[in-house]
Image 1: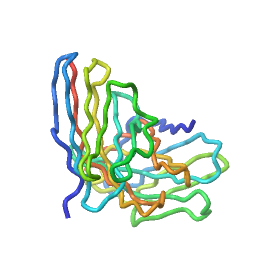
Image 2: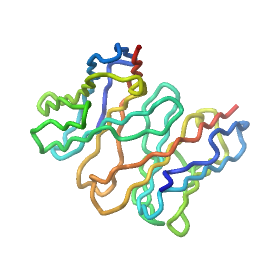
Image 3: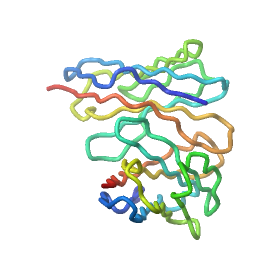
Image 4: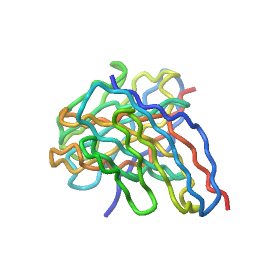
Length: 116
Length: 116
């Protein structure tokens, strides 16, 4: 079974600063995908960024980037130039590739507060 | 284009009663997923529909939960009879269904179920 661990229940960052959210996972699979989802207060969860395990290059999406360390089973999210709208719960998630069912396995989440 | 919608947004029922949650996926999305987040724990997968068929129901906790997707459009999740431990937020997600695990899952706002 796959597990995803987010060791930081809550974090805060000053506006315009950089913050890194940590995520580790455990799996015996070799082909999989990793995701970061964001759920702003009272709003729907949306996909922030996705990483294919077979790709060595770290994914980036504007101010969001990941540090994917496959051997260490680590998948951290870096948010640069933090904005007030980044305040949200952030969930790290895992999906096995090619399993037929595309179920996501989530961590418990990290609550990020961006302080003006 | 409308996103994934869920109804009701909040439901409070007594232990032993029945509740039915509804999810309307994004139009044209063949894949529909149900997840649940119990307070303080991870978001857990419940099941996955491809059109009207159950592709994976390995996450369904017990036979008090019944999910349907007649006609391959909206889905319902019925809990009968509800127990205290069923309290939580029930999320629905949908994806296009190209047969790719890279399909993004779009989440609804969730239904908060409280069993008293």
